[in-house]
Image 1: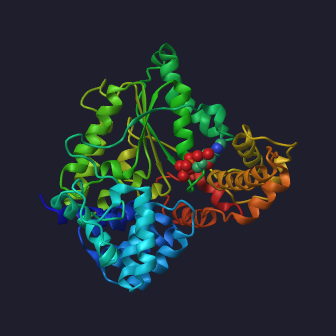
Image 2: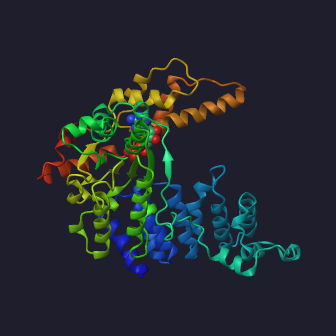
Image 3: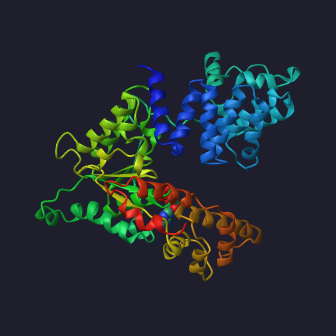
Length: 463
Ligand code: ADP
């Protein structure tokens, strides 16, 4: 087996989906784990362009710097993270190494011991010894880690690379029971209706479907700008159906060993089959289902072929009761073979919310909070271009501020419309405008098969 071939495949996937943040992070983490520091740095930097200030990416970058002995750069990356109360202890250890490299032993010791007081598993005997002044150095306690173990801890990367799929289990996705239904999804009536007909009716009313010679099964490709609610919608579809929900991220499938990604994919489909009825949700699917014609590597093509084979099933009943929902921000990167009948044959656009949908989303997000009489329409009007994920950010910020006031006052102070309006001013919209610009290019210049007709009225709008 060749790690390099697997890495190549990941690089290839990143080249084909350049804006796919989880993929870039995964690749950067793998490069770091394998010691390709310069390449890891380049990947982390590229990921940071997609998501500036992202704490995981900054932490990864800081670790690359520490391992390259660029301690000042590491500290610059870590500083904003260390200012957040309750920052992850592993960042404290990383900062300790960087500070030690800079010769600032006092602050290094503070960071190190503060970090291991919160997470003892990060203890590093060698670092501790170098940070403890010689006269006070405690004699090694008998129960201290065995030398082998200590050496292992020292070698382990501090950056928490996305979890590797365990080859013996094959895939790391888990089964959830979704507590949401379509009532928790604001707006999106057309989208919900499309899902109802495609996914829910065949199972709820099989006779009616059989009468028209239709068979349940197959999947739907949900596409649209990031944060518009694709994951939320998929989870709600599972709840609406009373089905299990398996949420598959890239790190559950992609593995640097040749053949392992295919095995993980198969194991994930099997997990869904064992838990039917089940909604199997693939996020960022463009990385697993990229256009084979764009690929230079036979190895990457194998994963796409495996995905198609899993969707088809070994026989007619293999995927009965398994509903595949796949989401992507970049549907144009998905191989056209996925659109054949019985596969992800129905692309469904999940649009950014309009004013009334934004008001409805805000109403849902605030429904279990203490409130005064709210003017959600006013907030919706003030949040043009914000998507569901951004609105969640607005509500979270307003609630946090209110919580602090309530703690000082010693009683719950309800949320008001001005609180939401103030929070809205501090939230930067997710890149809907940029997404629409990209979509416009595809709709206008690469829409021979009419696949993107549904987008036409949207991209012609003003963004
Ligand atoms: P995507 O998968 O498209 O990137 P998500 O589904 O993760 O977006 O949306 C982020 C969050 O925004 C969700 O967890 C949910 O709280 C909120 N949200 C998005 N759309 C809606 C909606 N239509 N109704 C209620 N909440 C929503």
